[in-house]
Image 1 (cartoon, rainbow, N blue to C red):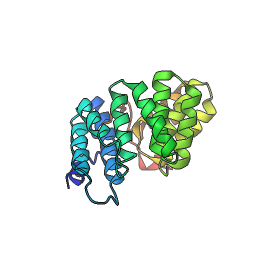
Image 2 (image 1 turned 135 degrees about the horizontal axis):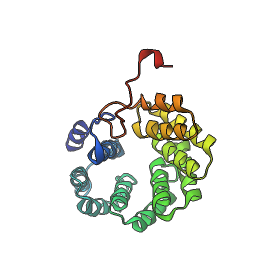
Image 3 (image 1 turned 90 degrees about the vertical axis):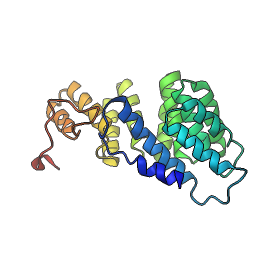
Image 4 (image 1 turned 120 degrees about the vertical axis):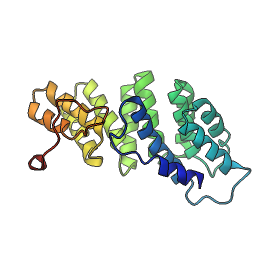
Length: 232
């Protein structure tokens, strides 16, 4: 019940909260939903593990990441709560800037759960942010995209890698795939608009900005709401 209540409290709409708080809540809503789904079909409570998991989620919701990481770590030997608890622990470590620990944890998990898209996605995030291993990051995001039915986050970061490497055509293609997967994923529209602007495709840039609703951290004051005749 606690987990279900957490899901209900964190049904965040795109652009609902501006700034860092909004980005945290979007990530949090997805994290809580993912964690709850990890429990689907679980059997009876084992040694209080269900209570520990609920406490870990509450700590994560409150952004008490040290506490959440410690609680998720206590579930490392529970087959019922893996890989979900391990992924959540790695995310805590990532946000605590303890990336080497997060990387080691995820690399151990991927050996046991090679078909888990979230593990590959977060390995890609670590390679991209900390080790600047663009090839390794791209490889992990590509694997996540293969495994995930709605891989818009991985597509967004893969597009960023292509952009950094100067592969503009591939970047545009991947950004557009991400937009198709999550139509109102605001940061993708923002990044795509910026890239179109830099290559001189101003009308396409404006069209992408019109997809970003007011209240979004990526909304620009000169953006005009998308009209019916603009829809394709």
